[in-house]
Every structure is written in structure tokens, then in C-alpha cells.
Amino acid sequence: MMRSIEQAVRLAGFTLLEYLRSGRVLLEVAAAVACYVVLLRPTGTPMSAGYLFTVLGLFSPALAIVTTSYMISLGDRPQGYIVLAHNVSRGAYLIGLFFAAVTVVLAMYGTLCILVALINRATDLDLTGWLLATLPLVLNVGLVAALTILLSPLVLGTGWRLFVLALVAIALSSNVIGGPVINQLTEINPLLVDVLRAIQTILSGPLVPVFYGYQLSISRAFAQMAAWSNLLAQCSLLLAFLGLARYAFNQRDLLFSAS
Image 1: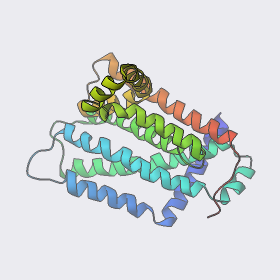
Image 2: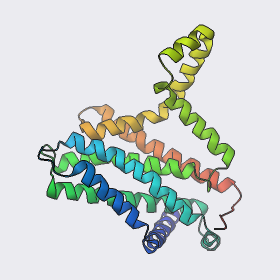
Image 3: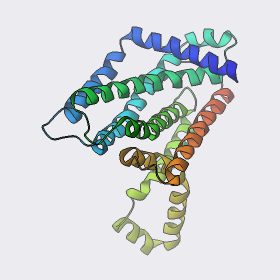
Image 4: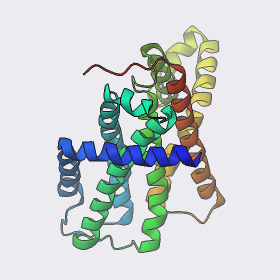
């Protein structure tokens, strides 16, 4: 286990070096600067901690999708055969890409927090509050990065990717399919509506820790046991995503992109 983690850390360092050499870091820096200028710059009105983490709680996971996708493209190259030929496990290879992507996103997150602290400090935020708000936010970044890796062509085939995306779409459809649509479906077939609601409830379960973690980052309400339970649920879901990605990557034929 420790050997795999050590291999993953080394591969993450190598991937980050390739990432810096490619100049791609300028895109993440530009995105962070744009986020600060548009949403977090001083406007004459004191900024609240709730607003700060509302912005960062959306920006960081979105950046995680973009950055992780690029890290996957760095790993999905013929050079990967050479790396795996030197007694490096597939799991360590995949986790190394995950570590690299999360490191970049957290660096951008930290940069934005420093800029805000120096130039436009939130009036109701201290170091303890920042640490508490950061915990669920970082876990959400990890969850989004892990899910992006799981849904990548490197891990799953086209059929399985479409299947998983369909499950996610059904889980999120409760906010879309409602009102007049549900009334029409009820008139046509009430049983169909009951089945749809049951499926939505089951599939939306894994998404609850993500959304509650976002709210928790904004409110920083850790006085209740439910907050700490949600952190545990986020950690469990993260391990599940990484475990599924590792298992799927180990099971499929190793075929990197030729480009």
C-alpha cells in the first residue's frame, strides 16, 4: 500500500512537471485571476464569508473538471507504457494523475484566498472559520476530480460512460422533471411517476454529501454532528469513486491514445 502511494506521489510530481513545461498553467492562472477580478475584487461593500465560499465552492470544482481532464490527456499517451513497464501499478498511475490535478486546483484556491485576505478580506471570517469551510470544499474538489477520472476514456469505455452519465442525469432530473411534466405523466401512468421518483431518490443519494458539503462550506455550521457525518460521507464517496476508477482501469485492456 505504501509503495503504491509513493509511486503515485512520484508520478504526480512528474505529471506536474510536464504540466508546467506545457504552459497550461497559464490557463488556470488566468481563470483564477478572472474569478477574482469579476467576483471577488473590492467593490466598496464589505464581503461576507458566505459570499466568498459561495463563489469558491462553485469555481474550484468547475476548475477541477477542466484541470483533471487535461491531466488525463497527459496520462493518456504512449509514454504511459514506459512508466507502467517499470513495475508501476495501474492504480498508482491513476492516483498520480488525481494527485496532480487536485494539487493544481488547490494551488489556485489558495492563491484566491491569499488575494482576498490581503486585498478584500471577508469581515466575518477568521482562520478557524476558513479551515472549517475549506474541509468540505476540498473534499468536493476531490470528488469532482475522481468522478472526472472515472468517466474518462482512459478508464471506462464509451458504453459504460454513457450509462453512468445517464444515471447522473436521472439523479439530477428531479429538479427538471416537475410541475406540469409530472402532472401529465401522472395522468398517463401514475405507476411510471412512482417508479421514476423511487429511482431518482435512490440515485440522488450519493449526490447528497456533495450538495450538503457545499452548503456546509458556506455556513461553516460544524456544531451539529450531521456536519462531521457529512465529511465522513464525502470521504467515503471519494474512496468509492477512486476505487471504482482503479478497478475499471485494471480490468480493461491497456490502450493509450496514439496522439
